[in-house]
Structures are given as C-alpha cells and as structure tokens.
Image 1: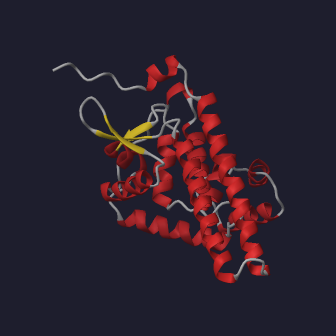
Image 2: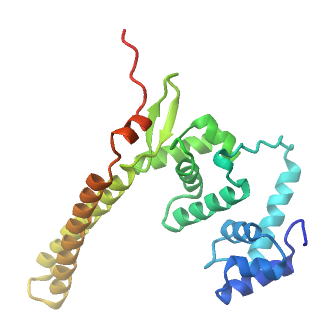
Image 3: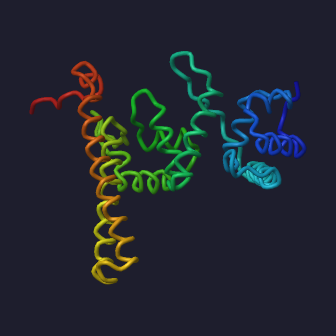
Amino acid sequence: MPGGRLTQQERQQIALGLADDLAYAEIARRLERPTSTVTREVMRNGGPTAYRSDLAHRATERRTHQRRQTAPRAPQEPQQPHGRDPEAVRAYEETFTTLFTQQGVPRMASRVLSSIFTTDAGSLSASELVQRLQVSPASVSKATTFLADQGLIRKDRDERRRERYVVDNDVWFQSMAAAARANTLLSETARQGVGVLGPGTPAAERLENIARFMDFVGEALLRAAEQAREILKPGPESAEAVSPPPAPAP
C-alpha cells in the first residue's frame, strides 16, 4: 500500500472519482489508500463539490513550505476517550467544519464550533482551543466572539473562574428562532413594497405572496422549534450531569 503524501496524479484520480460520484471508500480502494486519507484530502480542499486537484496540490505544497519555515512543534496528539479512532475523529471534525463553512460560517469559527461539538463535555476553554487547533489566542478570541454574537455558543466560567465556551441543547432553538426573525423581517420588508408599488399591481402581488409565504414559514418554524425543545429537553438526570456545581456559600 503506498504511503507518504498524495501525488498530483493521485489527486487527479480523486477529482475524477468525485466527478463520477464514487464514494470515498471506492476512490481510496482504487488508490490503495486509507479511506480517511481521501476524506481528509477532499474536505481540506473545498469539499466534494468544489475539489480541484491542481488547487489542492498547490495548497499542500504551500502548507509544506510554511511548515519547513516554522520551528517544529512537539506532537500533541490528544488521547481519545472511549476507544475512539483519532484518525476517524479528525476526519469527522473536518467534515463538520466544511459543512459549517458552506453555510456561511468563517473557517476558524467553524473549526472552533466543530471542536466543541465533538467533545463529551460540550465545552472548551480558550487555552484548550489554542492547543487543540494549534492556532494563536487571537484567532480563538475572534472566532469565539463571532460565535457568541451569533448565539451559537455561550460563555461560561468553571469553578476556577476560567472562561469556557459552551454549546448546549438550546443552541439549535436559538438558531431556529433567529431564522424565524429573519423571515419576519423579510415579510415586513416585502409588505412595504406593496404600498410603494401599488396594491393590485403584478409586482405588488408578487411581494404580497412572498410576505405570506414567509409569515407561514416563520410561524411554522418557530412553533416546531418550541415543540422540539419541549419534547427533547433533557430529563432531570441529564440536567444534573451538565449543570455546573453550586457556588459555595459565603
């Protein structure tokens, strides 16, 4: 089985396999490479719909050159709990990161969000994120500020008063509520156009239909989110497991 870095020819075969809608496992089998190698390669370079072999090869050469110019760091491979395969976990985090970036989340913020989502604790401190992602504290600070502003994470403090970044079961409700508010804003703006363009005109009718559609979708989305939060909220045992310990009495 070949080892080492992927060659330019192998990257071209990956691109051809993606164009033929082949699964990662089948592409890897043809290359005699591990599936995780192909998965990482694709997700690191734009995902299955945007992967280009020439750009991927140049990006790899650029990263290699940058690593040679930087003092080598001691390997800090985190110990994976529950017998997890570190390679599979890294590949999955890259997949999750790519998904977030395709939905408009900045790359570094996507990496932070994926890291927190895939920890058992559901929270990481700034120093843990710096070590885990091998980036600067400033990069982590900028990414966590963005995510907190979007309501995708919240800031908390542990018993030692250290700031931690947390995702919990309410994050998706807040995300859906924000989407519902955006639909409401679009509906209100469309109805303003009805008055400007004149009720009964084709353009005004089009805008009125947009407003009615967004009203319906926004209300249905918020109602479904509220029902899901109520039905799927953690029970008492789960709540005790994730709740921070009470502060000691003065």
